[in-house]
Structure formats: C-alpha cells, structure tokens
Length: 294
Length: 168
Image (tube, rainbow over all chains, first blue to last red; front, side, top):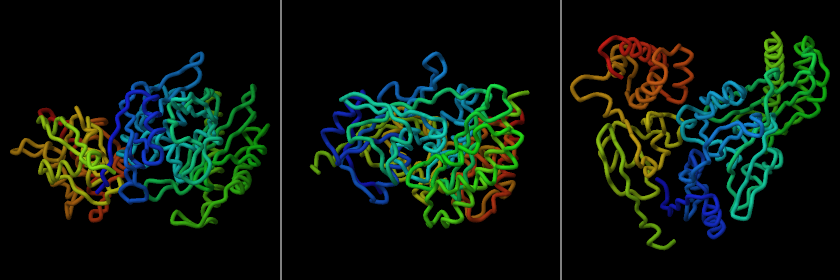
C-alpha cells in the first residue's frame, strides 16, 4: 500500500514549476507513475506531495518541426504512443522498434518517455537510442527553458541535471535519413534491459561507404555512453567490409563501458553481450543501408 | 504532514464494466484497491505489485494497465473493463470459452489478467501470429501451464471471435 500524499494538479508548466519550487524536496512530479509508484511502494523515498502533470495540455504531441525534419515528442508521450505512431514508424523506425521492446505492454501503455528519462534508471532503453540519435531534451521551469544533449542531461545512476523546479517538456530528434542504417539490440530477463546497444550508420554520398557511425551502449555505465573509439573505426569503411570487422569493433566498443557485477549479470558477461550486440547491430544496420540503396 | 493533507479526497466518476460508478478516493489509492476493496470485484488479482506479472491487468479505455500500479483517481472519466465485465453472466465470452476448451490455466491465479491482456491484443489485432501473441503476452506470467496452452487458447479465441455472431 502506498503512503498517503497530497495531490496537486497544475494545468500549466509554470504553475507546476512554481509548486515544485515552493515545496522543494517534499514534492515530486508524477507522470506515468511506472517508476515513481514502485519507488513509493518500496518506501525507497516518500513525498508529501505529488505534482501530477498529465493535466497540462500540449505535453503529449508528436510532430515534425523546423522545416518538417526535426521530430518533436512531447515528454508525456507514452511508450505505446511512440511505438504505434505512423509518423514515427515511417520516419523514425528506430524509435518505433526500440519502444516496442520496452518492458511490457502495460508499462508501455502507462509509462512516458519524459518520465523514463528523468528517472535516470541505468537499466533503461530510451536514453541509449536517443543518445545515438543525437536527441536534445527541453527542460522548462517558471524561470525559463534550456535545451541539452542526452549526454549533458544524465549525470549518474538515478541522477540528472534537472533542477527541482524543472520539468522535461519535450524531446527533439534530428532527422533520420532514409539511407541511414540502424539497429537496437537489448537483452532482458524481465522488464529492464541487462544490456542494450544502439547502432546508427550514415552513408557517404555514394552510398557504399560509412560517412559516420554512432554506437551507444546502455546499462553498462551509470549513464548511456557512446563508444567513440569504436565509432572512429567505422568512418570511411565500405559496407561490404562491415561484417568482417564487426566483432573486432564490438570488442573495442565494449571497452567504453564500465559494467558492474550485479543481478543483471557479471561485468564480463555484459562486456561480451556488448561486443556481440555491436557485431549484430553493425551487420543489421549495414544490411538496412544496402536495402535502402535498392 | 498536516491532517488536512492526509484527508484529501477526490471525487472519482468512471464507467466500470459499462456501469457508471461514483465514489471518493484518496490520491494514493490504487485502481486495484478500489476495484477489489471498495467495489468488491475480486476477479482482478494482486500478485507481484510491481507491474511485472500481469495478474492485475485491467483495460483502461481499452488499453491493458497494471491496476496495482495505477492510481485510482486517474480512471476519472474513463472506461474500466475487468474480468467481471467480459461476460453477461449467462454466457461466457469467447476468450473464457477458449481458455477452458484449451486448458489455458491450472491454478487460475493469472487467468483474469491473461484474459484481459488477450482481450486487448485481439481488439487490436483480431488474427495475431504466434510471434505477435508471444510479444504482447510477454508481461503476463503463468507459473503452471508453460504458456503453450495459453497461446493455443488465444488462437482459439481468435477463431471463435472470427465466426459470425460472436462479439468481442
């Protein structure tokens, strides 16, 4: 049973922010509740007041902006909405495919993208693929707003740069070209991933070589991380060569993590999973690029 | 914490299995608590209490949610469907028929949740493939059956519902 709390139901971001500022640590934002309610049940934290923000209009839309290229996702979009949205499925299939794999169907129906990011659970999916996609996160308060990249947002296990009075309002994702190759691999025993790997490859104008590649790793460090040394090895590589080098790049990528031995597996096991997922991901992404050329 | 805060209560009106329900709830009451303890519908089960097992699955505006981890006040103005609302009390719903026919349960504790999740699946995709069934039902745990007969039950329900004269 949950401990009693007082419910606030603001109707604007400014009002919500003011409430959070006024009540400080005794208040917390309630969105989908899929993480917060578990924390409250386990008595890992208690809050006198929850600020329910789902009544604030305009925080759950999905649209293309800035010349119809940048994707704007309202922070209160549920995972299910993202998985099913026709625009995301056609223009950002990586997001739809990754969202489809999150937790279970009930969590996806309730949990929000913004809530997931702000909770900063290291064993989560969205931070990993949004990092590879170069997404930017918009934080608003009664004082103003700021926009940050994913790597500037996450600080540590369950810790972000979010100020007590700030609310994540949207997630902006730069265009994903149709010729890009992508993949998202995760392994999970139950709801949360043990390890997750996202690969995103952009071709050069000829379409036969990789212009740039992003490899992001989830659950193997306090925050999602990019495997920058491994990414360097991809620049200029012919698509036909990817399969041959994929495992070696996977082994390099695994060095970017600092996994811990925990209930999700040993550190060695997680490093091995990273190498294998990067290998599979590179092969799959390259195959998608080959497919896009035809 | 002042007493007035603890005593906050919220009016809650929603449709439950097609009937209008109006009551007052505390902000921290879960949908499951309200269903079982306030309304007396005990078909929905509490098991893991952390959104992993699916025993407490109900449909909220047609979508499967964990009622153990949903706050009751959020059902405001919505339609809640529980296992009690599936049949009219005389004739079983095709999903219930199919679970009996195919042996889709043993102890039965997970069954209400299984059937509600399966209802959401078949409403969305009347003819799911085995892969689609497995993906959708992944979050509903059964400790008895080994799942094969649950999958068969859902396939059978899909067939039954596809026959003329059957309503979802």
